[in-house]
Structures are given as C-alpha cells and as structure tokens.
Length: 113
Image (cartoon, rainbow, N blue to C red; front, side, top):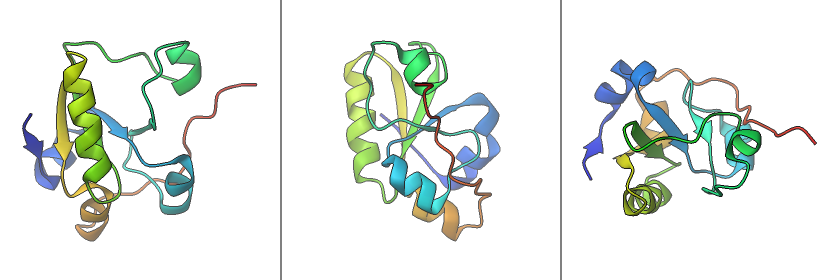
C-alpha cells in the first residue's frame, strides 16, 4: 500500500473515492474533505442504501483518511485484504485542514428510515 499526500490528494479529488473513517459525530463537528464519504465500517448488506453511493469495485482507487491517520491505516489494510486498491492519506483531516484544504460542512449521508 502506498501513502498519498495533501498535494496529490487535493489535485486528484475527482478521480478518487475518498473514505472518511471517522465517526459521524466527528464529521458533523469538524467538517469533511469535499466529496469524501463517511464510512465508519464496510458492511456489505444494503451498501447503496446504507452509505448513499455504490460499493467500490476492485478497479477503483480508494483513499482512506481519519482525523490523524491511525484509523485510516487500519481501514486501508482491511480494504487491501478484501482485494481493493487502497492508499492512506497519512496526515488525514488534521493535515488537510492545516494546509488550507477546502472543508465542506460535515453532512454525512443518513439513510432513509
């Protein structure tokens, strides 16, 4: 697994699936990287309904991030173990924020009841 840094991530947001593995509460409180998906787990059942986007395929490049990097690393390892292409944004949200990356209001997908 190779890591990704701020410059590469910010220049390629449109071509990557960015998975935010922080809790929904952290996302709501701190905001999120534009276009990222709040995904605290990878339950396969009803993926589209639960997360609001299609389940990533093995040919997509995925990037994991959290607040500081630890959970992102664990999530990246889990994705690779499932045969997916994953990279870790090591600096994660703290690095993104410190470098002036755009932050959207925290609004994680909420499935319909």
